[in-house]
Length: 95
Image (cartoon, rainbow, N blue to C red; front, side):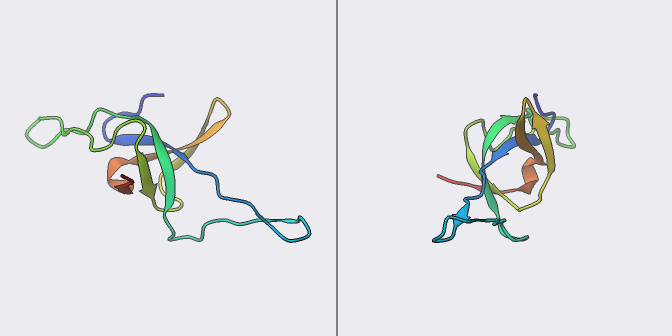
């Protein structure tokens, strides 16, 4: 899938499972408002400015980014769960 304009396709990292001393798996989810980390899988070419020039994307494929938990649209492509967000929904990149 190739996102259009200023949209970015992200593979969000799975949350770690917590286990009790007895081996029971505890369901853990990041609480709302806590950013999640992911990797950029694909991105559009950028949006157009009012003057007609294309504004280049600030992220690229392979970048590790932070987005708000629950941001964007969740998609399933080829059995893989991905999140489609606008570039403006990305909080930052890890360097």
